[in-house]
Length: 159
Image 1 (spheres, rainbow, N blue to C red):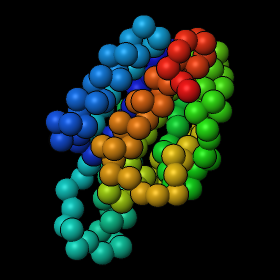
Image 2: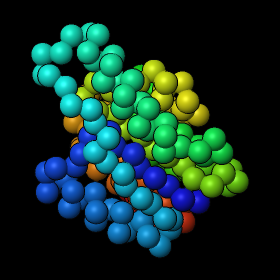
Image 3: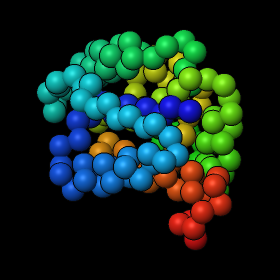
């Protein structure tokens, strides 16, 4: 199974990038995991609702253009389903045997994800009701994906 992490925001801080790259490297024996970032639309920090909706729509179009109809889409959203690491591993194993060519894990930008992307999602995952910066969410996602594979394989890491 191939995995792709799609981050609307660009991973700019080297300490996040270093951590993300470390987990992507650790994932290589288990799966092909690709990271795509930097799909964000420029916006004014004081943007109103209309401008935010325009930005979300544009970002959503960029995300949807990357997806094939036969790929699984997982949206990360604070209103999604919260799972323990063990439960996430069970879900990852289901995705692994689904017969689909790729799982896309989508992390929104500062305004979240567009309604179009949320509607396209096959599964919506939440790490917490807290809001995290996108780069931190990507780091947590990469680590939890690695942890899931370790759990699935029965290898030490998860405690």
